[in-house]
Length: 173
Image (cartoon, rainbow, N blue to C red; front, side, top):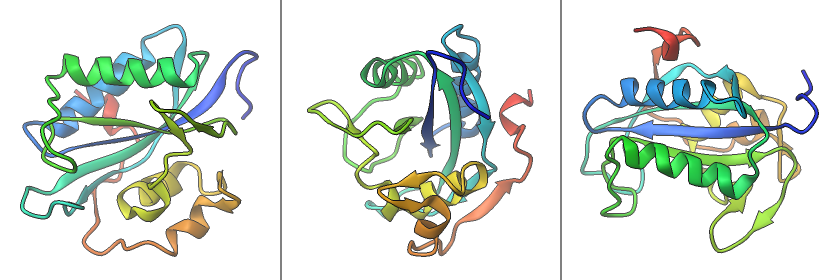
């Protein structure tokens, strides 16, 4: 499905491990979907994943979503950061515990390297907790010349398990 004129398809990564991350991710997706300039077109299954980078913390919940949007890449990042702040996200330590994390992974075919945003996300292809849910919704999406499903074969997915197989988990009360 091609996006409407003036819109692009952006891939977002979502995660969290403090409080009710599943509920917060659902609220974030609902907030984006309620906007006139964003439409959620696909959401992955919900995954429970072991911590990455900083190991002495609770498991995470992770998912990916595709959003059709007319919001440009950096303003989309700002929108995601505003949603995080509204959900009391505090950035204390890199890879540390968090209520919610919203990452802009890709934006159409845009390649961008600015001080605020790098597209595609520079480390996404190294992370099973990103590639696994992204493969649910966009297995043939090309990232740096390779399909998501090909990248998935190269990453560590040990310990990652499906927490909810229903791709409508984010719409459930």
